[in-house]
Image (cartoon, rainbow, N blue to C red; front, side):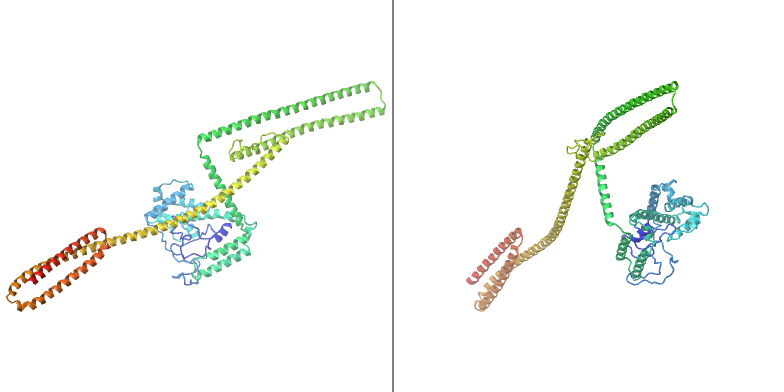
Length: 639
């Protein structure tokens, strides 16, 4: 009942399958070799929850292709006869080997009585398969006994009763180890192991709600719980039919109402978790302390044994003292008994004398009656004294027994106190947490000294507890401050890492830009070299043309000397034309060189030097051309 309550609190109802797979709700078929989270309700061993493989089929009808479209509410049969396709890769050798390893681990951990080997699990016989199936099913039902007859029909029937979503035929049970039937049988065993693990997890979780209410067993079957569960089912089913597959809000609301209904004490749970954490830390600390050097441990054990020896010696001396006291009391009681015996003998002697006197003398009836009365009184006195003596001896024996029991209890409590004090390092006097105080309680201290020692130890322990609490609070504050500092440092580290990433990105971009610039510079240098070569060729061509023109002009001059007056005007015109052409050529070259010079000023120093040298050479050539032109003009003028 508690298990069903937990399943309804922690997950969606088992009758509402989910269509969308997420990290917490995965198909059981896909998670056969791995661990998974249970997503169904109360585990009923004869009829466990059945799930599908890749897509989950609604028990209330067919599903639509879109998540936003409403589902068909036509009931096509509750748990209808739709055949579900097994999408597990059962014919994949790696998947089968993984399942075999998990089956071997499970059987080994749970103490399987039969023999296990990898060869046996590769192709087991029908008898071995039935034994493994019976062993696994007994984890769900310890009282299960496999019948000896028709086991080939019994195993598929049990799987069908457990709502195994796939078909395991009876024919396959006759040859379980065959290559075409063993993967399906192995898949059935893995599905059964998954059910066992889910049953174990739910059995552990049912302890969470075991003590929250005195009448918790009656609440789940009551009207309040049924109303809450029906409202939750109706609301989630309504949204399920509208296309929703997750119901986190409804689950949280239902969980809140259940906690309120069951009077869940979350503060108690938090306190228990904190106490568990503290105890875990204490255990870890003690385990770390227990891993000290062996020599130191042996020395500490030697010191403890010496202290125990001294305590045993003191205890023996106290026992001797106690024995002496008991012997003194016994001797006193013996003396008292001897005195009583002597008094009794004197009374007997007096009685004999009185009887002798009675026999020798004659008494009146009054004297006889008086004597008899005194005799009866003396007999009553003797019997009462004898009874008092027996009672005193019995009381003495009872007091001795009670004293021994009280002393034994006191010694046990004192031993526990000393053991706890040693764990807390409070004793001996030179211990780490003793601080020079004596927390040891010595046995058989009587009087006000023991009370004063007890009061002093209680005061010291209270002071030590307060100091420990203050130190704990101080360490907690220090821990909080260190956590804040750590968070600040982590944030700074993240900022710096982001800055480094940005700087790296900028460096990468600058490197790319530098490469592009270098390539552009190399390309421009090539262009400039080509242009310089073309200029040099143009200069040589001009020189060649000038030389050729000069020769032709000399020849023409010789011819013109004869026809000077006829060609003088043509010569002047040609002179002006040549001068204009040369001026335009020189102007273009000068402009080009100035532009080149401006571009070269922005480049590398080596390129600038090369360009400046080239410009200087060009200027020398131009000057040479100018000198040549001037000489030509002067020659032309002189002629």
